[in-house]
Image 1 (spheres, one colour):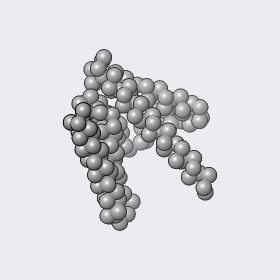
Image 2 (cartoon, one colour):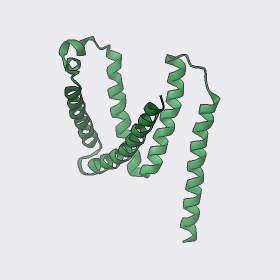
Image 3 (spheres, helix red, strand yellow):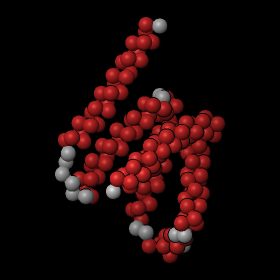
Length: 154
């Protein structure tokens, strides 16, 4: 059990690093290509990587027309929501910093996960999770105050 947890922690950290790197690349792509085209490039790359993973794992039946037809329509809405979120993310990152946009996205993801856990998994509402979100917000607020204070003193 402990080995799996360590593996998942390593994967989570690696994905966090890749996520920040991905944001920086998306911002640069949108500067050169525009917001929509930069985002489209990201989705095209993700499609190619996904196809490669399917081929390597041998799950090629997932790309057959019969399989795709049997997937409920509402599951495809995640792609549309993800595309819209990525466009907003690129615009927001260009207007702020990668750090702030990452924390804002994290707060949004944590908040939505609480809602979805309650709706789809009938989990009890957890005030501890909400307190955790407020701790992240207060940490960012504190960080911003320190940065502004140091900028004023220089």
